[in-house]
Image (cartoon, rainbow, N blue to C red):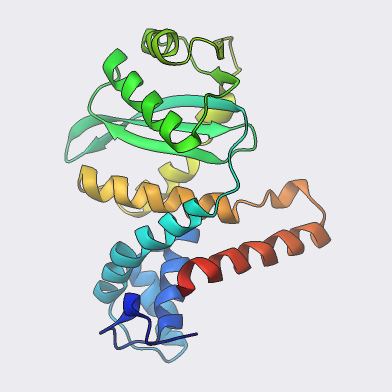
Length: 232
């Protein structure tokens, strides 16, 4: 690896350590202090504050490269929103996943009205670069408004239980939110969630759905994609 890469210029630790720490943080439910201890066990003395700065700086850069290399999402989007408190104020976390469980987008907003729904749908269309064949939501009226105005040709399914996939997709975020003792601000939360989604898509390999041999192959392929994302 070219350690003279401009991305890592003026960082005194080897690039491999920075990449390893950032991977740890976004793949596993670990705090910066946990990673500090794991690195210390390997004889690497680095403060948790340095690890936090690495994650804030390099995480979004890695995620952006992963998204550029992404092969595309499915044709069905499961969309849902949940309440989330930041500094004591209620916000709404909008999320869309495709039929394979990949996160298409995740977006924090202060409202859950029609304007907010349309804003989220526009983001989805920009990211996917085409209209989905079908969207699945709950019966929130805001979804109906956004559907009629922006993607009227897509099927809109609001039947009971149809949107369980999207509701379950919030669980990894909830786990991380608890581990981080809640998000501190909207920019901090959005930055983390954007990066976490890209890394989650890469390493969410459905271990319980495939054979051990196939899982090892998918894992190796994911590691290769990660190495490519962090190398340049």
